[in-house]
Length: 178
Image (cartoon, rainbow, N blue to C red; front, side):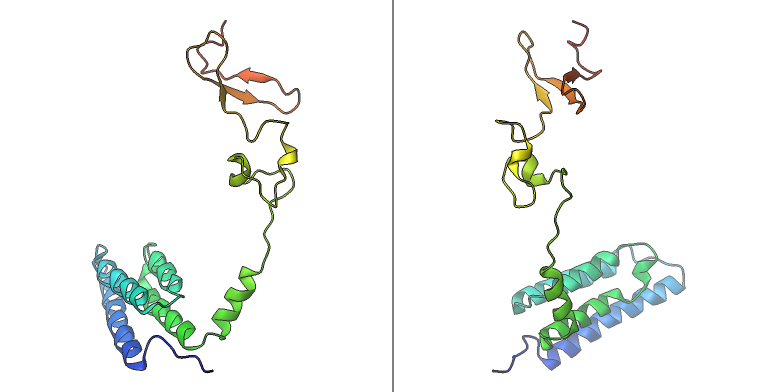
């Protein structure tokens, strides 16, 4: 079974012509030391993203990345919008092409946190495969940031020092002098 692209050749031509024209206008403005004040971005970003979402193109993230790069000063003078649209069209027409192979390889890379580091899930108390919950003391699922002491009306900020494991009140603690 052969892959049927979601973007036809005529649609691709019109899309590249429109985005290419806005990139050429942007380049001309840069040569005259003028700025478009994000007008070209407003005219192109919604058009491409809505179109790709309606068509169900799964690689529209390339276009988003290029549109975000357009916001960087001086980098935005490059024809990045056209490159992003061409990347999406290429990924749609060649699902087993170089872009798809790189994405496939990158998705298989297992990134693990170094031993002893905390991930967001571990701090939130959820178990993860990279941070075993056994590293925390029994009953503790995260790093305490404050505690309520007897006689205190509100939580007192504290710092934890690993050498002696004492809870030391921070300098901003109103009850520290007591």
